[in-house]
Length: 398
Image 1 (cartoon, helix red, strand yellow):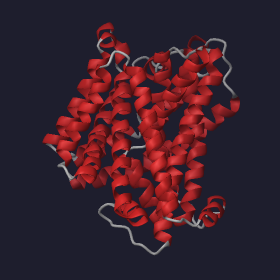
Image 2: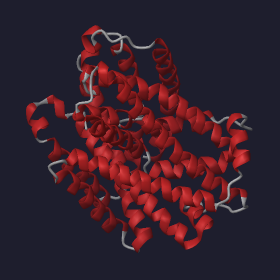
Image 3: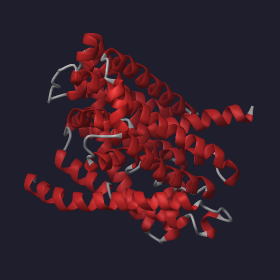
């Protein structure tokens, strides 16, 4: 009986992490990069998944072994750092959630022809209703699992319909014509950046799956989440590759929609609406849950009312989208600053992995530490380049 419950919780954490990373930006990103790199984008996916493993395994294991959330570990390594990280994550989470709720509205517009703002409001009510239920954690687990399965099944249908050159894709995955490092870094940031890396680990803490004895379960859950994200990315890549290889030029205004439309006609276009909505609503839920999990431990009052904080988070994101729309300048600035979170938190995690007062007598594998350090170096470089080149551009926009 215990094992069955554990497996359900592990799958819930895995899908929460995976569907948090598979948002509207994920769908567009994958389509655009496939358009520019063609079959060689397979290599980018492969390498980003490998690096993803390096980041996720470190974070999930240390959170799981210590039984402490990211902000508490940060404060133990460097007093006050946890508050700074939490501030960045909540701010970044709000910015991303405005985009996610907008994606919900666009998905329902494709399906039913309604105004995106009305679709966003309807989606917000659905998201909020999950956290009004007493067993909110279990309902959230089930919802994200269903959304994940629906996205994968429908995208698989479109990928098969587009008749992609699978042989070429396999060859170029291991022997690419070109290597685009910015694409690798962008994908890595989209799957482990900001709150996403902590979503599954924090869910396991809430479920009580902590300690050294739970390590096999923690590892299985994190790897499952990474695989789900990788499968979805690969299916979108193949669907897009098939359409482009057939000689079709994607619509610049909405590249992913044109892939689904060309591959499977009007049915494909409606499928795109379902996939976009499922990706967006599951990201709204995962983003709100994880962002709030970064502040709920700071006081007993916050802990007692965390579900209302999650609801307020969704309401605020929705109101900004409905009243203001997407404030591009603010979103990009916050998104850029949010990129700092991965190297900071991963560095803190690697330090914490070797501190007895945090992990007890647990011995962290050397290969994981090295793997994590490589990811830190890569993402620090990415942040440096972003700050050097993007911020001046943004100041020009302002």
